Image 1 (cartoon, one colour):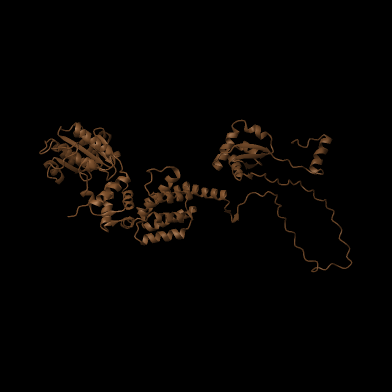
Image 2: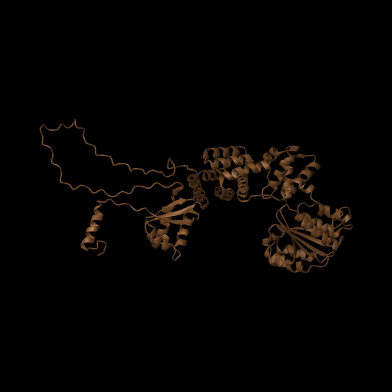
Length: 552
């Protein structure tokens, strides 16, 4: 009968174990020196070699002819442990034997001496599944077992174990296996099985394995059932992946806010029998790589990809920006949770695509940050705002539009009476023209500080006294500095007292997210005409001894 590759190629010595050099070296050293512990705890994610190392250790402690800490795999005891005919090594699945009664039976068995080997070894897999009562029943035996008994506990969720269990075991942590080592092992197994695997396909299988060599060999087994020559297309077809090119297309559609194209691409993937949950997970992984590229200069081993893939992803990351990438990841992470319990995975995925293409449909914090970033980029690049191109402030004053003159009938439509006397002029006081200040063009290198109005609004709420002084001021940006144009000469002195300058800087930073060096400029006073009635009234008041500024 055919045997799965991960079972057929399970390591039989510590030297064959991939990616766990620290653990295997420590275990071999204990075996060579004879300093064996009575209880071991192997922890780590799935498929990293915990059960494999437990079985190798069980053979090594009983082997008649060990070789440098490894079992010989040739003596009767090693062969008997491999085929299960020697009962001195017992493997217990705690997921199905998690009650108190199972542990009590085990506790009664440990009193018997081994039949063939030197030690009775109990391998308890998924030990975190034991009940609280079973843990309590195991405590005393685990702490002081008979001299001929060794316990090996294996778990993927060590945080679920009681501290009393942890303190009684010698713990070894199994880390995720590096993709390069998984790819090398896949290539070796494929060669031994008469298969050919391209380097790109082996690395893709290693990335899909996510640190678990067993998963990588299982994926290789699936691909081998389709073709003897395994390349990228074979892996993509067998695993139901969308592929990096498709993920890049989806990301481009979102960046362009092209919802029809994105929905059409999702529909194409759905009709090709692509799983929507896997598609969402792949997209999150792709965006994670973009996030790393925007945050780290030298990615090193943080991203497993070919140079061409890295260059394409780096260009995509620069085009999107970190806030947009984080917003997309947050939406897709929430979609992953809903996909597992939703009625239609396709609908959930389409809803996520629509939210990504139109951030207005999403009121999350990440979506708001993304929208603000888009507006900031539009302002910096001079993009169209409200249907009109944004341009720099005019250097010449713009005359206000004149009010439309009242419409009167044309002279020929209403004939004037013959010999009619001219109408007397109305006895009306001529209107006094108000002084008008001609706008001063901004010098070269200066531009208005558009956010000053928002800063004043913020100051109105946070510090009303300071707002009262700043009300009516304007601001400019010149050479990276913020120039405040004021009429009140007391503002300079006021900013030096009571932390007022810090409050103003905090308001500017709150509104713009940036800090600016500040300077003050005195507004140019409006030169009043010589025949200004208000000046004449003030002069007449001073001459008559009346203080017109005195309040009643």
